[in-house]
Length: 373
Ligand code: SOE
Image (cartoon, rainbow, N blue to C red; front, side):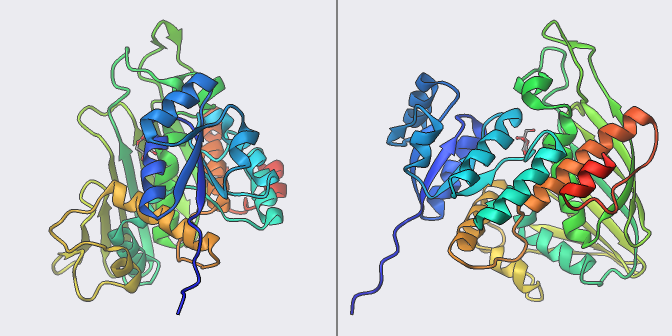
């Protein structure tokens, strides 16, 4: 008997850098066909198509849109909203890199547009897709650690340490008004709220700039940010984000302390989860038989064969395509989560500017964004 055949999803990529490579690899790993790529200029599209092994180099966005079912937006930050809007207006599914938009108002507009278009609209907060991040969520949001008392999170890198270090993000007209926080702080707050299962209510932040100029141009955006936060259930905590901490590469650690125990997730050692107890602590392994189903689902090779960033990325894209096919995969980060990260990023800037606490408790939709920020 003939099985019904489903056509592979046709994917378009906007961008030609590191993220375009990562999205292309993940789309192919999920069984999709990457059919077209658009970069900032026609000759760059041709170069990106050659580098990524994509048959069609698009000269315009319309050319790309007419060939695809889903578009992955991997262009520089300031262009995300415009690209995502055009994709949604064409009625196509969209995966948009973070920050979803450099202004929360634009991110809110995209959330509305995506819901009206009735398509899948996802943002790659991919650290959620480490099996042990799911296990951490089970321990924390599931209540195993008891009532949440404290939270502590870091995301530390060093690739902006020297005065000569630079990239397009340093120019605020391209990178947006926030640099380190929008780039990696957004991952940290997304993971914190996802694992804790509750929101940050208030934030008080300070920003740091390591060098007044880079490449002879004045620096306007932060290399580091530190925040004090208050959580929904009353827990207090601190978050440190830096791209100038020598020796740190992608040191994302998250510790949640509750009345019954603590849980620590470390992105550079993602196959393990530390469970702290007053009378003894343990390290859970990715193959522990008692792991929660959501962690088991994402654990695709036996423990001892390390899983990491690319596996998490691939799992995110696989789940996005499952949602496009009509499924409802657990924990898929959508445009609403992209909006939440944009709101928190804006709140961090506003807190530092005004030297005060910023309340982010009620900000959840477009009207709230306009009202509060
Ligand atoms: C660069 O800071 C970067 O590649 C980020 O843009 C990613 O989102 C993060 O996962 C790793 O670091």
